[in-house]
Image (cartoon, rainbow, N blue to C red; front, side, top):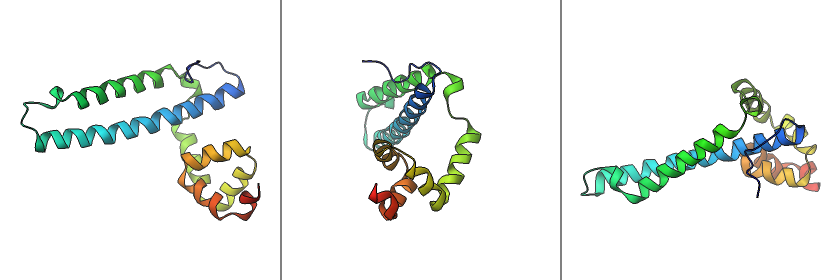
Length: 133
């Protein structure tokens, strides 16, 4: 199976790279939450000398490193910039604009958008036009 972070510069692969980047960054956020919870629990409930000895923490730190390596394999020119992220947030903040964007997506992409963005989920749930698709 191909690694979703290995891409060329064609338009389809650019979309794949953005989706891979989004998925990996979301997984990194989840990993950060798990690590923080594990470290807190270890610090307050464990008699061991340090968090590095906890196998769950060691495993999550390995996962974090693997995720960061996957991010590094996505070519820089295919990663979303901070400016493009801010623009996307501005568009997604306006339900009317977001609905217009969503109406131009394939049904499978609508499912992906619904999973990745709470604003898109809300528009898809409330918009008659989107539901009819």
